[in-house]
Image 1: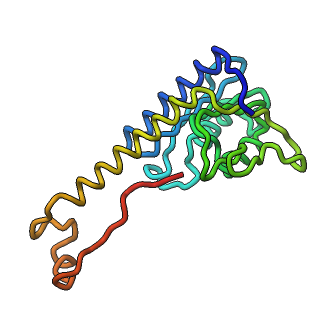
Image 2 (image 1 turned 90 degrees about the vertical axis):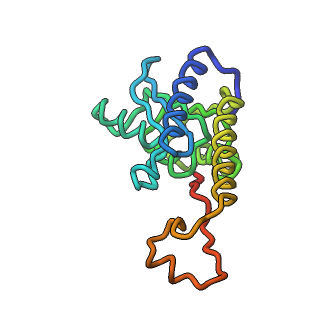
Length: 195
């Protein structure tokens, strides 16, 4: 699965990393994707499930939808997708249905990776299309973006929890805040989504 990357692979992954940074800027998990055909950029995408209120708006799906629309075809057999994080099962199947020639990813995903980390959907011989997979292209850079994002999120959460809350600043409307019995704390989960 992991092989030597070419200068084109690294150039494309840098574009995907730029897209991942776009996701970070809007508060999304920083995953970015780019689709090439014959070495030319066709479409890009970054994670948008939170901002779009769409659980399917992963970077790969966003880029895939743009490419299919621009090329006027739901099948993209001459295209290659570069993504900073190993595709999940949903994205892997969408890429297989679109008949991508090749999928290249940066960081492996040990929790939901469907290109070999948890399961390898691309290697299922029963499926009617087989996409070439390559992982580990600029893996350290791709992993670093995710590590830094989640470290920042954890620190922000710690700061919010450590900050004293004065009366009327509970974040709840006043009528709701008064309904919390004295001595009871309102515990909220961190505001982070994980793929």
